[in-house]
Image (tube, rainbow, N blue to C red; front, side, top):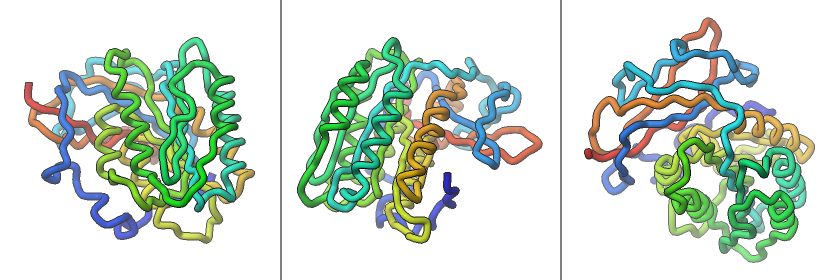
Length: 301
């Protein structure tokens, strides 16, 4: 995997990265308890599996969380997965490689007895090629068939719709891992929603967004900053492949990370309405990288 440093914020689209407390940008819901999933890796990107609750320190709006009601590491949480493929004109050259890698990923990661996934594609329009199912054959057939001719890219609208798929099943157990894997260059030309809308809805639905793009290492893309920011804010990861040969290895890394998560539950430190910023710190002698969503929304009960 190519390590990509976060790009300067001035490369993000104008108006796309204001703090979540900005007036007019608050999606609220009652949060009697916060449930946070995260991964921890060393400087080489290898996942760390042996942390205890005593090693973890969480700040909720800068207030230290004094007590966890639950802490565990799980490799077998049921997956609720969304595969979102950019089929716009700007990525049509690499689309066959992306489809092949997505097919391999689905066949490897899906456990029909516990997992469900859906397949969506976008260009000038959005289309769900397969609704949520546990059937790997149906999912693979959907990826194989998908196409989206025409000009235009509704990147943000597609991710907003994908996040909304999770919120349409309110009765589902909290003990599932919700993730979206999006293959795109991160460009958007005509969405009704913006980056802030997507992140707000992902945080509300506890959805981690994993982003993957394919281009040469010497190319600096504005879309890379968007993809990096989406992953950082929601607790996912950003992957940049230099060639189609890198895709399978990156999907293998993604599979391991999606499957291996720490999760912790705690009561909000203050029941103030609106956005609560979260910060996860790890006590360890070596430098570690934490991937966790950056906050949650709440209102007073």
